[in-house]
Length: 212
Image 1 (tube, rainbow, N blue to C red):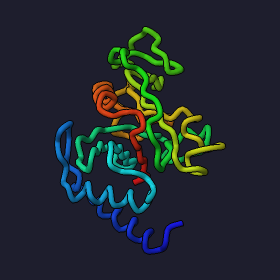
Image 2: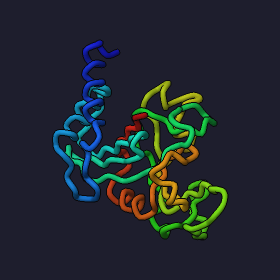
Image 3: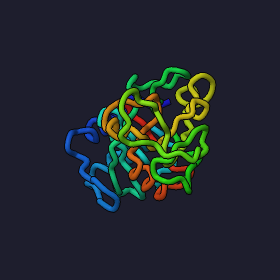
Image 4: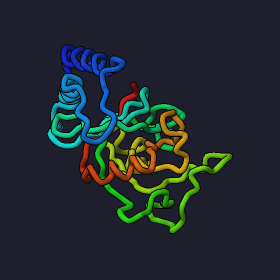
């Protein structure tokens, strides 16, 4: 359990971190404001004191609909994403995006072409039409980064298990949806972005999803 002072520090750090305009990196290799990155790492060290934070970390902000890629204390890139249109939630069959600390447990799609359709984590041999009209088919395309929850009772185990819920970071045929809360629970990315991210992060990368 955290002491009240630890929770207060975490709340203060997170409030500072999420001040509009504080994160400005927009592409691979672009270093963000070091003070903002330090705040993020300090928040994580308070919230998850036993977790090593020296490697790659992906931070998903549901409020901003953005994913921030941090490595070794440096902000490398930001990407627009789409989280669930139903908001945050960890319950099975809720179609919500689970919050809390996760890690990448599988990378799937090494040789799948951009817009290649994956079903049950296998390439079908079909390519999605990126300009389809009508109902969003929720196709999974290009790459999958499968997530495993690391917080028992929050996103791990029982009816709240992110791995059992098949929660992924993945490409989408409906790229127009990216930047708005519009998914069925997963974290959608544009195809070029998810391919680039897939190539840059290893299995075991920490992923923290926050409802802010």
